[in-house]
Length: 152
Image 1 (tube, rainbow, N blue to C red):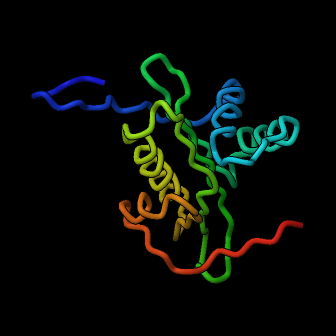
Image 2 (cartoon, rainbow, N blue to C red):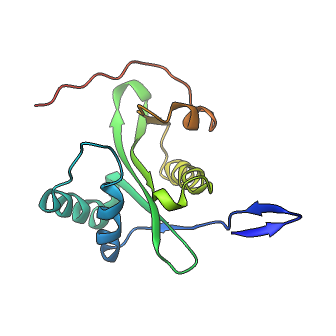
């Protein structure tokens, strides 16, 4: 973090596509996602390899600091839906390391995801969030539906 005219300014993170080598860092961030959630490494590894190696229907981006340490990630899925007249994207996960929150890392990741979705021809990007609605509303997202879930 640097200071300009007495104001602390966070250095922009470097946003890039995730690689197989980022798996341990992303797994560590996943553990910060939600209290009570315990990620299973074998399940994570299978999904991670799929997301990195078959990126046609996934966008997996990381934010890295000056030393290339992964400090955040976002996972987005893409699907062709009937009701969107084309490709739709769903921002599934966005996690920023506790020590890096409040430095606009999440905003940089959202902006990068939006650009990638546009580049792939997506017509909409949706997100569900229990605690982050105001964050997404600050990025021009609006509430359009209730989110319901049933564990199978």
